Length: 387
Image (cartoon, rainbow, N blue to C red; front, side, top):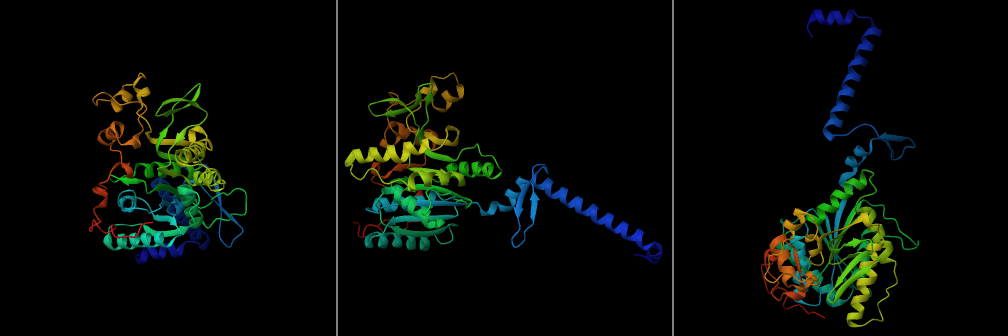
């Protein structure tokens, strides 16, 4: 400041100088506040209350700003349930680690607590970390539990381990802001895939902003047909209307509130299928742990990325979009009763036309490809002692 200006300011009465300084301060504060809100595209309308640690007073913030401030804590966890009984299943785990982990923060492999299982999974984890060093960004851990409830039990064990849940109450509300994704070792990844992860992330954004009416549970495959008769379940011998939708369990994702619904439905259930054998046990698991889970949510809270069966009913609708997307040009057509997991015409159609991301292990003896690039030694798992 040059001398004349300094003299002019000094000549001002002290009270006037203080008012001028306060005016400048408030102008700067308001300008900065509006700049922040503009960058975040927020509207300072709705209010929310947050308690400050070690203080009794609350701070009112717009819910959008509340979410942006806490967004980094909403992490994504992939839990892989496995009973690593063959080299193919171990390769399946590897393929999932390579291709189904984009955007994932933490991977937890949940396996039976037996010596052979521990040895195999620890070998896989060590080999993956050494081979893929610098090429993955997620945390990778393994946990081991008594496996008395099949994949459902191992997923529940993983969730209980991760959240350190208190099992004393009849219901559990999981307050941690985490998205959970569940897959098992029957699925071999064919390509990098993150669409389901992104879908759950987008729905979580809405949920954290206060929208409680969005999707909370998304499966890779599902049968979500419904009319005034109810939900329609297709089977290999035909189909019929039922009270519930069917969302398959091969690969699923849940928003933070959806995780609580899953846990209270599946993880607190006494396993009802122990006395069933063979195909009857598999049917029991599908009915009790897949179909009934969809019924624990309201219709608008569930979704599927791909139809379980070829959706010929969509072609019958007057929609050029459906006809363009699901145009069946394969020789002889696709049987409406053909399940994707059989690995036949419908599966090949999904892979070729819709970039379907996985296949069932039992449908392919040659489990190598894009998602085992980091597995330098193709015979690395052949010498393991499988039970």
